[in-house]
Image 1 (cartoon, rainbow, N blue to C red):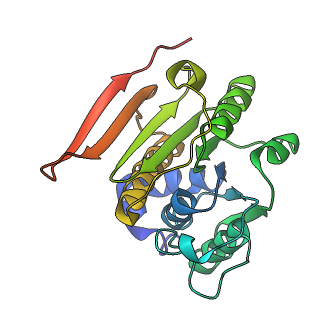
Image 2: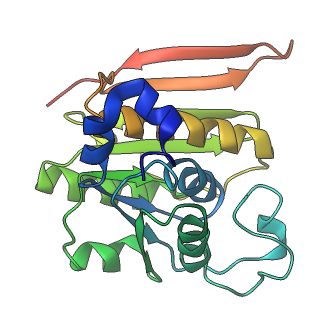
Length: 223
């Protein structure tokens, strides 16, 4: 097994790599962010990954959702992502849940971390409420056009930081989806490996009118 994770073992040693085998996470949403998260984290040696999504692949999804290809239309996104992880890494157990977050929460599955890969504020508010009730950290991520946001929530309230409204996402460039998912995945892996992570800080990443990549940081109040 260690030969598969050789370059990661060079980072933190076999003890930490073995520790990851005892970690469990849930990725809520298996579309744009969820596909890239599954790709990035699915071969990292995390012991168990739950993928949650009720939706099926559509043609317009495929350009930004790297787990899918033409011919996958009509298939469940969580199930396809779980299959991709298993094909890339035999040392990770994957469980797909063809349901929304509300139904997944009722299953009361114990995990170490939840990662948001949804596309709407009300569901993120549900994730926040669930995690606060379980004293469980979660990582928020969102994308739109050429910008995105990421935050590791531990003691801050999502509802206090965001106005919860129904909003249809605008256009999205495929690379920014991968970029935001990569930031989420790095935070997740560092946390699970016991490395330092800046918590309760919102990162806002965008390209300005000159094409310059800008990162702004905002500390969120803790409760």
